[in-house]
Image (cartoon, rainbow, N blue to C red; front, side):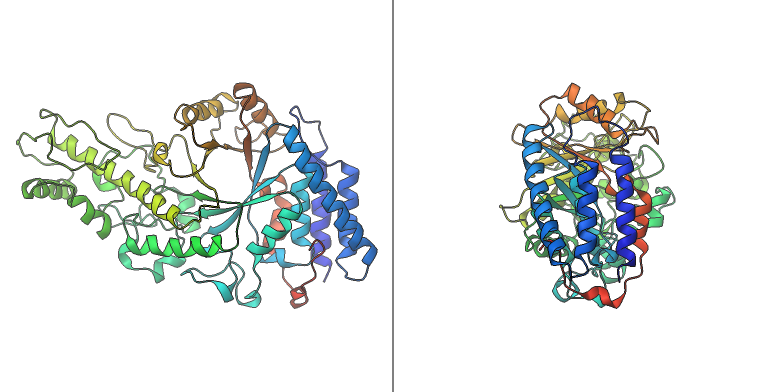
Amino acid sequence: MLEYFQGVWQLGLSLGMILYSQPSPVPDCRITEAEALTKATLLQAAITGRDRLSQQRYAEIVALHSQRLSQCRRQTQPAVLGTWLRLYPCDLQPGALDQTLDNIVNFGYNRIYLNTFYDGRVLLPQVDNPTIWPSVLGKEYKDRDLLAEVIQKARQRGIKVHAWLYTMNFGPNYRGKANHSAIARNGYGETNLSDPAVLPEVKRASHIFIDPYSEDARKDLQVLIKAVAKRQPDGIAFDYIRYAHRTVPQITQVQDLMIYGTPSFSRLLQRAKTDQARQLLYAFLAKGKVDAKLKAQPRWWSFPPHRQIEILSNQPLNRQMWQLAVAHAQQGVIDFLNQALFAVPTSIPTSAVFFPRANQTSSNGVDPRLQPWPQFRRTQEWTPMLYAACGQNDCILAELDLVVKQLPKNLELCPVIAGYWGQSLGGRPALEQQMQAIYRAYPNLQCTSHFAYSWLDPQLDQARRNCSIAKTSQRKFSPSS
């Protein structure tokens, strides 16, 4: 029964090689190497269920580290330091979840973005899963509520848990269960899976992007949000609030917009104010352009409320309809997020996760993701993903600058940076170097997070992902409960 945990324990200790190999150039709240080793050793002894003294001493050191983490983060910038975590059925092994959370505390993190809805699966127990999606855990552990367990154990350690949800990306399971019209389609009838220009990793992961104007999709997500909110997470983070990314940097043809599903297409035609305008718009959507010489009037189209683009009588008709189609696509994203937020109790803070450059436009085209993040104003926090990779910090700071300039006064800011402690890889400086640059530029920033926990030790993540769970691991012993 202990073989798997012992492997995770040993790999967890290997994180210390990363954690303590170099002094950090930025203030941190890390646990000392000796204390981390003592805590892990006590946990290993405690999970047998027979060593009462080790259980007591382990509980005491967990409580002590929780207090010290809380005190240190109040005195150290940033006050909130998060990491992004995905759990697996392997984490049901006795002590495995405790070791993972202890590792997170050892690094000084006090927030977790926990992947709760991803790839068409939910982190809910099968016996209490009202959603259309299957549970991450499967039938063997149908009564285990891993989301609730993480929230409880994390709070004991001074960590807050934000449920991290894929928002317009419903995963492969949705394709066979949903109304056919709920899936987003372009003008060639393609979903993001059949679009030859979609990014290869999107096809491999079998993401399914939905039509944000679909009432079925909106209701399905709201059911999930309410089920997650029942577990009382410390926040809910909405990710994938956008359309699929493509290999081309910009879309220039209306047929490439994912607005041809029945809900979106019908709503777009309703934005034409006259029958003649509707016929012209229909022809434009079908052919990509019209040859009509009519001089459009200023109120020819009904634009979405936040996109009151000035329409001049001498502006080309095709240009007007292109602007209308883009604004319509973006408004669907905004409306879909706002509808999702209605399902979140007011006691639970929300955040919007986005790419700062995913809303870029030019005179000829738009970014395929069409992510209108400046209008994500009903969340309490913005979580921009600063993933630019240029070998230095300049491009990361440039992305952060884009966001800061448009941040509403009533919203918090918690950027995400990607990389590794102590080493520069993939065109990104080490995490501590990125943080040093960010806090030189923005000394008052109170929150940052690191993508991702799995990057701290890929071997550890592989072990957690691929273990074989024995039936004996059903034991309910919980060292830190």
